[in-house]
Image (tube, rainbow, N blue to C red):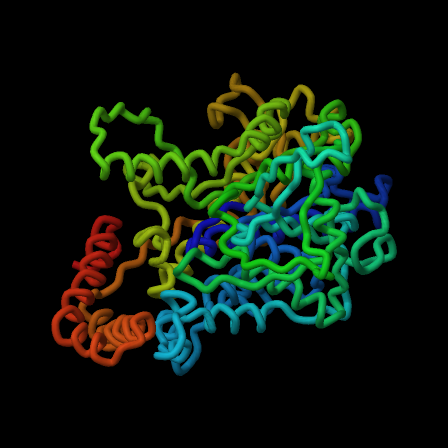
Length: 565
């Protein structure tokens, strides 16, 4: 799950529908198991193969959603957001990503702009007030005294959250070949990750004794472990400068084992930790800064856990990315070499190189056919019976992904679009070629199941290539002809594209004008520490600063078609 700022609401919708589909399918299979194949009510159209979620990996907003997925998968009280639960009761995805910190007194944006975190005597930790995020995390990540594993979740499940380590972890590389010679080079790594499993009958709490195990086993019934998870989740989502960084403390054992993950079991390289440090502390910010699309680390862990994975060919990797980079235009050569062009090019080069995850690319390219899948936003409008792809998809995407914090209806739209896109993805994309479906799924597929769930590409073409879904959607009556079970599932059987939201900018400005001004003014006072400078800013620059902010918002929302005319 990739980083997305406030568009994490889209990823949340995708995961919500995925979990609902897995649950419905499992219920249908369980009914068949109880009846037995000889029973007259046995449903031969229900595919009986098994699917198991083994690894969850996330960065930034995707890291938050990864944690929420873990907590929701293991919580028997979780309810999907559908026609029976439109307000998202008992649903962490909806609570955290749609409701956010909204309450009867204040909206989320008001809390983010509140000045209670600022002081004249202390340099601010972030441009926005992060306490609203803390409140969301505190309410969402709580004790689970009854951890329950559905059959489609591995008891060896991994949760991986990327992080950017501002302190950096130093490694000494010995070039001498002789431990007595002080000939070494120091290299520093700022990218990292937290890796967790959950305590059960197979796993004991804490850092495993095995020195090759690079993870921590959480006990979801322990406040201390819930706080570990909360800190890690907040740190991967600590958008640089916008939200405050987080101080993280992890076991010294974890750091000592980390070189094995980075470099393999090679001699001549070791982490440098101060002798008086019983644990390793560092300031952590957004994991998406260095690894925003963490499919590589997910694939690596999946390989570690499953021997002969690629030979068996019984796996798939899905990346949910609200903002996939699909720029197909190669950069043109810029002959200018003035200091501004060089500076601009340098920062672009540094950012792109950091994001060039070579290990992840190699791992992904080594996968076999139809094992790599992408869920990305797609919004369409029916025109003369044909679905036309819209220019704008996510309501949260303007202002570099921060627009979702402005209004709940932006987030609600993106959540519903995520559910809609996931429905289409499971029915017509997440599949295997019909000819080798039984091998890939390790199960016999009945003719009834083939007739119900297989589809063609091109759609409805009897001569087209045939595919069979990896996770069948039980709301389907016949996928080939796009016939769905409205009788039992109502409007949920074929979700519509949500209505694209719009806001009244005049009302927005009226509600937030004084709040924005106060936040900016207080930031200036906190940074400068001077009453005179603050007064000067208020007299000469406050209006210009506010106008710049509003013009940025206005332009971005207009371009995205989110403003009422």
